[in-house]
Image (tube, helix red, strand yellow):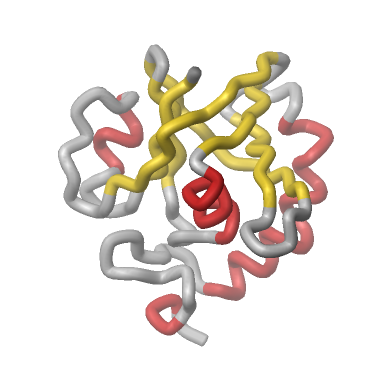
Length: 136
């Protein structure tokens, strides 16, 4: 399957990696990174709940923060954790040893104005969607 045919790929939030890379990351990379993600800067664990199952999940992401703005680049497209957080309207995140509560989640589509975002997401929004939330 090509990235363009994957359900996570939309015109507003394109999937930059092929689906095989995503499967590899989910199956091998994320479990290997879990012990380190709690201690390494830049890694964040998003705690969210399944939209239909109600199952609690934890997803490792690379995040960026500027003041009360929290941002994640969506190089894998609009994935399940993004859909879950958008549906719930909130999520919890663990950044190093800090617990954050995220509210007002939204997606900035490709080509949006990145004003107010941290530097890397502000530059990346030209070619990738960005998940943004406010820290309560």
